[in-house]
Image 1 (tube, rainbow, N blue to C red):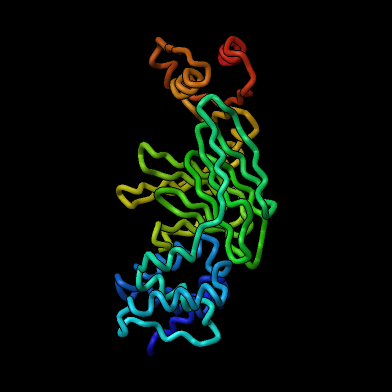
Image 2 (cartoon, one colour; image 1 turned 30 degrees about the vertical axis):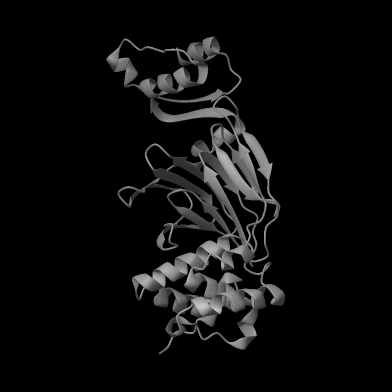
Length: 303
């Protein structure tokens, strides 16, 4: 049965039924070429403007300029009812630089925190709340589109996502994508190790590679560490209340060796904390340290 490429147009605007989405996924997995085209469609969908720049005047101009560039055997047979999205699909197939002039990205806002900065709370356009940790970068659009909500992250952040039945929320990193509806989760991107650690507090999320192919779905209480270099992941269960407390300006240690605690204190207070006893260094502790506590008070508490 011949694939209906109009489904790709519907995917751009988030208008697919479950059955249609399954059909698109099956088509994507048939060949490497299909996966490449689907990746471009997904990337365009994340660029927010598939519908915004698809007015009739732009489409006519785009079609006139690119029709001569497209091999006739590769043209998609798209229903006329989807004409306002046809130019978008044709541009994807032709990879024409001319066509991208009509798909300009929206204005983005970048929030960057330095090493010495604490936690910054950010409320997004849809009501979602993000806590951004020091030495992290969050890139968000000035406003979300009706069909999609996406942000990009470097570093660590905690997300409490407002539920929206008509629109997915996507967090894009350099190594993995996180697709959610109404969910709370923590995500930590380690650029040095090219890895991403995700902890799900509430709801459900799907981890995907950069081509949009699902890696796995997570359940509350799970932590997944994904390695981009090896394309592998490790899953375990954690105390989510401990993993996300940094957003309240607290350092929480749960069954942590004194050596690990000392290393964290060395970074926080910019001092060298040495433990002479190897036995004591391996002893495990459970404690909470407020960000504004002085080092002498913390050391006294540990004693």
